[in-house]
Image (cartoon, rainbow, N blue to C red):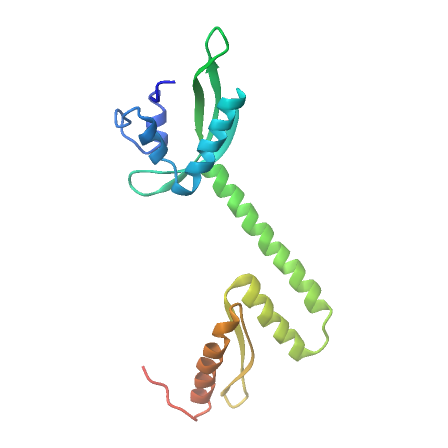
Length: 193
């Protein structure tokens, strides 16, 4: 192998490069990979070259403008007449849209799973206080980092009823903040801007 990479005119735009901008070096090619994907991509290609088998992998690339894009890479070793590996050939396909759809599906499935789990847990409860406590806990662990339920009393004051936080070390700070909020609302303190 020569350590050079030959591209056709369709590859540079996939990597966010202008025509002629790719210098043909393996170093530049590897620098275009997302830093978190470089080692895995090199290992997959290296394994294919050693075993003389084809490869396929999805990987991120970083365009010169800093944006991150997804490509599917496929390749295989090229042999000389005696079976010795003398290089590799391959293709890249833009899979940004496929990855966006996959991520949207995964997010949707996770939300649905949260709703189903939440419904099952809430369906087992008959005490309104336990329902509110469970809703807070589910929201803090499945949706965000913290959740609180604040009731508005008939006289307009705020009454905190439940608080949950994903990071238990921050729970005292959250309680303190909410205590000040409910104290201000009940006339015990004064809100400032």
